[in-house]
Length: 250
Image (tube, rainbow, N blue to C red):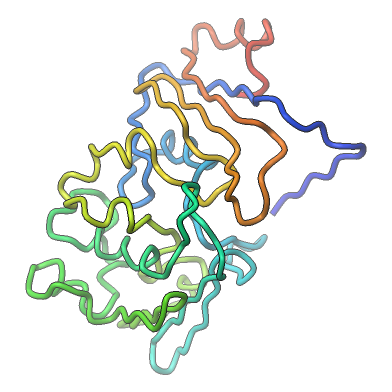
């Protein structure tokens, strides 16, 4: 993992202007369970809901919101989260928010790309996907801060977030009651998704731009920037826009 250190006193405030070079609108699906391309993934980097960090070898660490322990003999992963972590609306993060993505992606009405062989490595998810059960038998909520995940097999890929382990959260108190078939077009995904990251989305001009403000509830402390604005700029005009100083980075 690269790390940059700057000398001097940080300047507080200001808005970072970013140009997204793209010749067509972005999709604007701001959910890790539902998004489909790298442009939306880039837009979510400022306001994502990942709960694990990775080290220089792309292995999950235990120094972020979530930590995990693996029992390779029983094929059970225990995932725990820090206490007092809040969503950008001030509501507490609970273990239900880490369990919800499994039930979204594994649902029979899910039409995205993430119900794959890795997810099918979870005990009971195929029965859930087929509509034979209402819950996933391999996932057990221990308490508000811990759940266990039973897998069919464990490989080295587990330690990089593979084998079916999901590394992000979804806000149960906002989207838990929305039918899976309606999620991708909901305002909670398209217009005002919640965040666990330094910034939170405040305005979306569909396909054109996204504005973010500092997340006052970010568990590591609010960032020094006031906000970020990302705008789509066609390849034919991006050079002139950068030369004119309209954007800080692209």
